[in-house]
Image 1: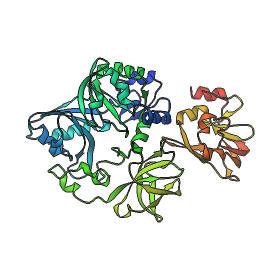
Image 2 (image 1 turned 90 degrees about the vertical axis):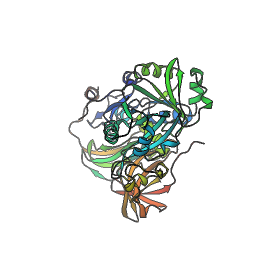
Image 3 (image 1 turned 30 degrees about the vertical axis):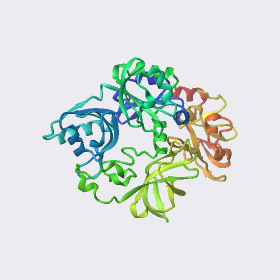
Image 4 (image 1 turned 180 degrees about the vertical axis):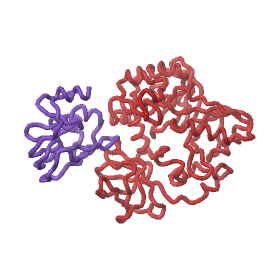
Length: 355
Length: 120
């Protein structure tokens, strides 16, 4: 049983308490779920700019002459397309189907990459990569404890950071990755994020993370917790490991089929099989639906909700669901909530797209 | 935490007024966060103390509401179907949930002081 004492803490733990955060256990970490409230934090990210502590995520440095060919083999996306200074969303496939994790890969140089992995999968991913090294001439370094990571997200992110940053942010496109100084601290910035908004992920030395957080607070960024992070990513239609992805869910069930490129990679034979389930988006009028609730088509169970919440931006409940591939084309379904069926319309993913 | 002294409180955070009105405490609404949906019982339903008879859903989670007394449901707060956030903004007033014609109160209801001490 996780107790606050046994949970891991990010370098921003004290800062969260000072900001009045409500803390919850998350993937073995003691993390802020909300500060002032999910709706207000969600709105700040959609309309202005907010910031999240994502220091619990893992960072692996992969370098050496075979770094690219190694990553080509252990991931499904085309790492060779990645130029230095660019970032890419990618997957770690399992040997026999399913996903070990979904990840981000940043190319630092021709023979050097940084891989960012989900917090709850750090140990599993590290062990997996170690077993795959074989005869590749590659060095792996776990830098997870060395980095603090703060995601600054929202339409005003660039405007708010620019006066304090040495890099010309207007010239840095989506998925760029670069070194800069921010508030006089050496950082790496990535124009990436997980909210469906513009923004930057700030990689800062763990021992400077709290100073960075305080500087960002002082320029008016709204601290946002896991609650808002979840409603934002759900509206953006981003799948989350453990919900829409797992060791047992076929990767191509999701709408992210573009992440699998036609190349030799681990688990290719299994990924090539057609998925039995498909991920769809659902919208309801009033009743929020939650993970695990049954999805019905013409009265018969065809799947289940993988993530659901009330959408703060749209003002009604939304959900992602895995349903049988042969039942994935209907316009309307029903979701069973506490023994009662409620009508749900199938809607295209994402639910929300920044204009 | 706002805990009016004229109410009784269940360990599961419902409050009960002398006239049978039931809601959730200020502490409970704060813990739940932004309320987005409330499912209320039918008027006329006979309930036993401790029975689940309503659900308050916040952005993050669904929470069962238990009857703090036995009796018959005589009214429900219809305003909550359009403005469930009243539970957050006015938990002891406009955000009430339902009324029970009380035959017997639940054992273990606390006064305001005991409730605050239990949730301090």
